[in-house]
Length: 388
Ligand SMILES: NC(=O)c1ccc[n+]([C@@H]2O[C@H](COP(=O)([O-])OP(=O)(O)OC[C@H]3O[C@@H](n4cnc5c(N)ncnc54)[C@H](OP(=O)(O)O)[C@@H]3O)[C@@H](O)[C@H]2O)c1
Image (tube, rainbow, N blue to C red; front, side, top):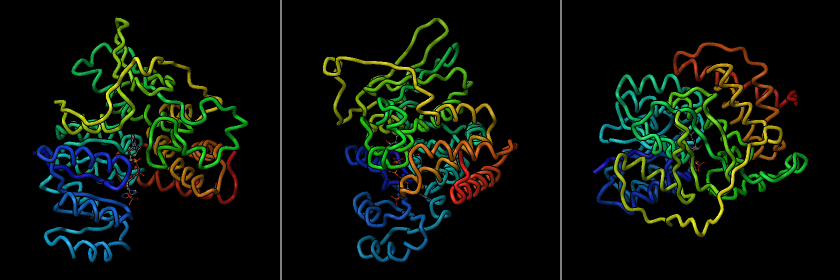
């Protein structure tokens, strides 16, 4: 019986993970669940899965959550705040922590879970984008396995197996998002509803907007660099609108290994839970004769400059990746609130990066300091309209 803490259980990845657990009750046991504000759903999940601990990040919701839960469940610890989430991530009766929190809020709990030698199933890519070097070093030191949940990284992880020698490149596939066939002029007029209308995947709002700008692919390039210890010039992005090939690995002899499947996040999530084994899954299986065609295109960096920005940040240094991520979180939030246009996301992140002076990053504290700087500068730029 694998004992699991799910951080961000009320989100898209969190709910799909619980779906897998629901179908495999004899294999998995939920010991901790966490959310940010959604106490209603967290409460329902707690009643169904009977964890020993739950935590809500938003401290103002703690009292209400405690009242709601104590009517139905007696033996449950209810925690709150950042410390509460960290406690859920490091809970002694947990074997594996699945991180499905969105944004840099996922970093601190995972860093602490690694220190406690928990096995990690990582969906929260922002953890590696902002602190990849620190996280991978800590994981290696404590012999902790980090298993990717992101479908592309899961694909690469599966393609590589134990053969990590003589890899000539990694090919990350991308659907291209809802604006793949739109002109730049059309993209400048994109509404929030247009950006959230992803052709292949149903995901949380932040990653869906990131997929529309292709910043998501940029974040994945940074994630891949750290996960697979590969230099950025060996990471290629290829637009593949059908989202059937989830990514590929090319070896020195020219052989390319690909992982295919229907676009369903439950596949990589389940593999992260059962690795190195595979078990039956309830989802639809791939039928290539129904798909008929798999097509590929070069990404257009003129219409989707956020992807290039991520490569630039990687080249500039670790602190630039933190600034990229922080400014992007602010920009996406502002876009979702209707405060800026879709194409302003790039302009804002670019301007924040332009103001940044590269600095060394040697601790989690450094990461948060630079992240804070990035958010403040981005908010200031937003207020003054000073981004170009
Ligand atoms: N969705 C996908 O298909 C997919 C695929 C690959 C990778 N990922 C990655 O997985 C992560 C989660 O994505 P998602 O689409 O599942 O996001 P989501 O639907 O927005 O869910 C985010 C989860 O994190 C919680 N949360 C938000 N802010 C928090 C904070 N400050 N502190 C603690 N918890 C917080 C939310 O709680 P509330 O519900 O209370 O707000 C929710 O449970 C992201 O890093 C994303 O890039 C997602």
